[in-house]
Structures are given as C-alpha cells and as structure tokens.
Image 1 (cartoon, helix red, strand yellow):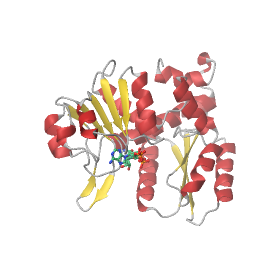
Image 2 (image 1 turned 90 degrees about the horizontal axis):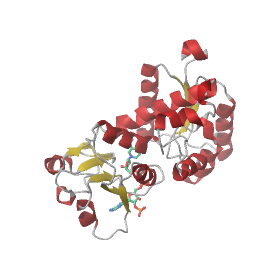
Image 3 (image 1 turned 120 degrees about the vertical axis):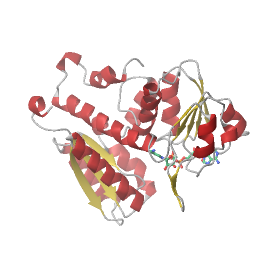
Image 4 (image 1 turned 180 degrees about the vertical axis):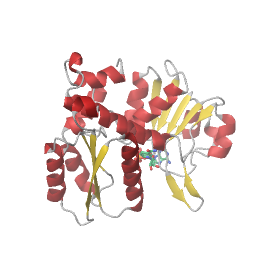
Length: 277
Ligand code: NDP
C-alpha cells in the first residue's frame, strides 16, 4: 500500500479523561497499529475537555489527509456529549462504525463501515465454521455498539435472531433455545452453564474487572463443558475487535487513496470485502 498509495494507512484515536480501562484499550490499539504498519495519531485530552474542543479535534482530523480513520474512545468524561461527537466524524472516516450514516447502511443492508466488535463476532463464528443460516441465535444485550448490530449481522447471515435485554422474561429458558448465543451485558459470569443448550456456540463479549481478574459475562469453566464451542475472556472477542478496527482502517485507506479504481463506487471497496448483504 505504501508503494502504491504513497503513505501508510492512518488511524487517529481521541482519548479524553483518565479512565484506566480506556487508556489500556487505546495503548493496545496503538500497539496493534504499529505491528500492522498503520500510522497512529493519538489526541489525548483532559477530563475537563469541552464539547467545542472535542468537535474542533474531530474537525481537524476530518480535514487531515494522512488520517483515514477516526476513533473516539468511549465513554467520554461527559457521556451526554457522545452522540454529537460521534456524529461529527466524517462517515468515510468512521472506522468504528458508530456514525448514524453507517448504522443506517447496516440496517439497510448496503456497504458501510461495520462496528468492530459485532464484525469480529461474525468473523470468529465463520472461522470456526459454526453454521448460522437457519440457526436460532439469541443475542443478550441491545446496546448500539454490540447487541443491536450483532443481531443485524446475524440476521444478514440468515440466522433466526432474538434479542434479549434486562426486561426479558425467563432469560435462561430463552438462552437454552439458542444454537448460537451471544452475550454482551457487562455482568460477571451472569449466564450459567444451565442456560446453555448442549453443543451450542457461545460468544462471550463481556469484559468485567473483578477481584479474580478479568472475566466474561458467561460462567466459562462450567459453560465450556456444555457448549460445543465458546470464546474465552480474556481473548476471543477482545482481540478480534482490534483486528476488525485495523481492517476497517486499511479499507478506509484503500478507499481514500483510490487503490481500487476497478470497483468504481468507493463504497464498493467495503462491499467487495463484506460480500453479499
Ligand atoms: P451496555 O451497558 O451498553 O449494554 C448492556 C446491555 O445488557 C443492555 O442492553 C442491558 O439491557 C443488557 N442487560 C444488562 N443486564 C442484564 C440482565 N441482567 N439480563 C439481561 N440483559 C441485561 O454494554 P455494552 O453493550 O457496551 O457492553 C457489554 C459488555 O461487553 C461489557 O462487559 C463491555 O465491557 C463488553 N464489551 C466488550 C468489547 C470487546 O471488545 N470484547 C467491546 C464492547 C463492549 P437494557 O437495554 O434493558 O438496559
């Protein structure tokens, strides 16, 4: 890409405040960029940062031709600012896939930047040859960054999808009906082995810090005895999320550098990778 495009892909990360977990995530992303030959630009801002300062920072990165992708690390010190800040990112630099334009593209089934964690989940399931078409999938959690897009992507894979949340009745029974169970709730080991159908594929998205270290949302040790296939925490979905971020950044760079002129419409660069919708 450097030979053909004249520069490496560039990823800008905006980090505001002192949240220790966010600092770890950002340094992991920077390390991964370095290993992959992607140039990373970090903008570290104080917890007292104003909305205008954040919007100015995003505006500068939007205008910077060396930046292909922009990621704003969430949560922001003032979560009420998140919607406006995410909407300020140019959709063609939105490698996290959180801009409503890309969310709309996902809903409409047209090519766009897909959110990294749900795309990583599908990549893992495909890699392990877990059948999805016609299978019963249950997604526990309905956040905009994991649950909802994961449900849409499973639907795109022709699974029959049910989305559960904190108001769902008889959750264990519902989970037991799942051939593919995706859990993203943020509650340590909340899903017990009894809630897993023997042989089911289980994707544990949760990252919970406890006195015993980092654990997922699924009771892993017992669940692995019942499940046919299960992702560990740590490991599993977390590293895949970073891998998908790098892939989106490379796709953004190919688009911005015009490296795939045969594909015509720039969005076709994404479509060629994401395949039929
Ligand atoms: P949110 O807090 O935004 O959403 C949690 C969801 O879980 C909500 O929809 C909530 O329901 C539902 N929920 C909470 N408690 C229960 C319950 N007792 N029964 C059923 N549903 C419940 O979390 P995120 O989606 O952002 O993250 C979820 C987890 O995944 C966290 O542990 C997070 O750290 C992790 N994560 C991991 C990533 C990775 O790279 N591996 C990336 C992103 C997140 P309701 O809507 O009704 O409130």
